[in-house]
Length: 237
Image (cartoon, rainbow, N blue to C red):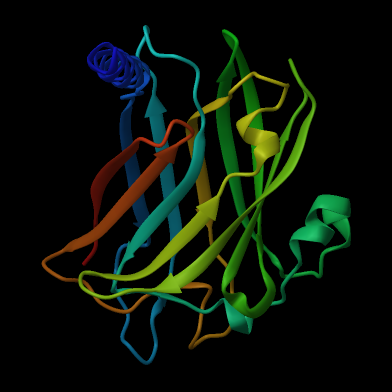
């Protein structure tokens, strides 16, 4: 009897592993990035540039529904961020009424596309400089097929190597599942940011250029626990 019990447990564990593997998502992920203008400044006076980033997630046809639970975007070490020199707006204020955010705190915007239950929603994105200059508040709005009004907050942190900063983003539950049981995949997310700050400290500054190339990376974590990484480069001079 004990032998049969052990065999049954082993069979159950094997079955669970097979199901887990079968349900793991493996979407195609990619990213695009660029700066304009592409000409560098110096460490003491970085060139004021517009930073454009696009994150792409393409689900496979036979995959179960999923969403991204978090994303980390890594920026080249030659990009300098001066958010602390700009006006800022809290996530709560952006969520409540972004028209009351201080003048100068809005730093950009873009668009996004989400899919859930076979339906596609086009979204607008508005970007605000967050408190302390170390946060980015991304207001996501949509009207059909669902009404969506949610803030995604990214936290800017330092790192080493070829990257100088990373933006750590936790996706709100309301965007992961805009309707009960309906996972929403953000298949495309485009954002462009730029702010004046000061002559010496723009919101995004290009302080250098290594071999005419800027490096970028995005790390995705999905709701089933799987991960994916995408990299890209941008030109500089």
